Image (cartoon, rainbow, N blue to C red; front, side, top):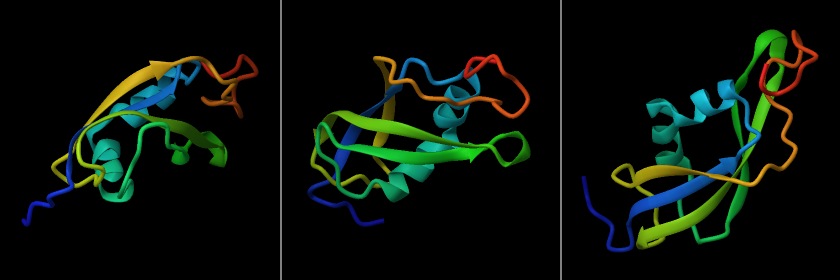
Length: 107
C-alpha cells in the first residue's frame, strides 16, 4: 500500500457526552473506526460532520455529530490513521432506543 506524504498518523474525533451507551458502543467499535478511515478523507481541526451510526429498533436511526479535535501529521485520513475518541460537551442528541423507551437516550 502506498504511503501518502500528507497522511495523518492520528486523528482525535469527539462525540457529545450525552450520546447514549448504545451510540458509544457503536462508534467505538473497530468496524466504525475502519469506516471513518475510509470516509473522512481530508480533515482539519474543528471540522464537524453528522455521521449515520446505525439503525436501532424499528428503524429508529442515530446520526451522531462528530468533531475533529486534533490531528497529528498531515490532513489526509488513510487506513493507517489511528482514530482516537474524546468526549465533548452535551448537545442535546436524542439517541438510543427511542421507539421502545420514553426514558431517552441513556435507556
